[in-house]
Image 1 (cartoon, helix red, strand yellow):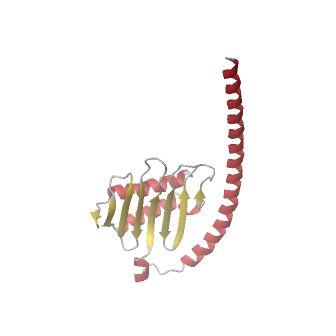
Image 2: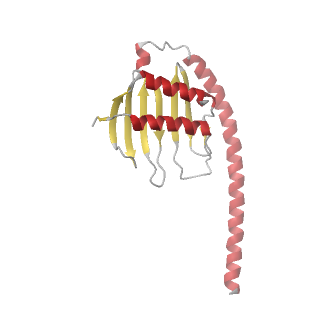
Image 3: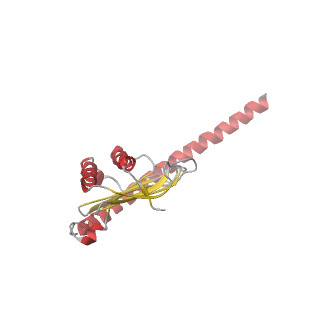
Length: 187
């Protein structure tokens, strides 16, 4: 009995030490992420200034991506897919794993629906979000990568860990668009 209690005490000490070390790693990773986010924000401001000079009515812009959402895999049964919408209304969906629709699909979306989503995302504060919500010390979480281009104002957000509620809201709006769309197989 003493042997069992002694082993339990040893295991408990190692567990507590490990948890403490992980908390320190999480804090360090969070501080590093904030510094990287500040540098990335400065780069994005420069890129956005250049993007704002685009002619949104040009033929070139018709082939520009205005909305995209990608979900990456995890170690479990997480849905994995890519969704892309171009300014001309063409939308493409590729279901990779753990999704209802597997394979490649296309559809044509109305410009009204596209603009409505972009305006709602902008109103929700999408363009003021951090570029990355992540923690390298945390594993086995899928990432959601969202990209929007509204009249030349571009932003990409990676959401994996402790994501802002605004990006969650925008992702749900895009997921609803995917669900409402009538898709045609391209394979």
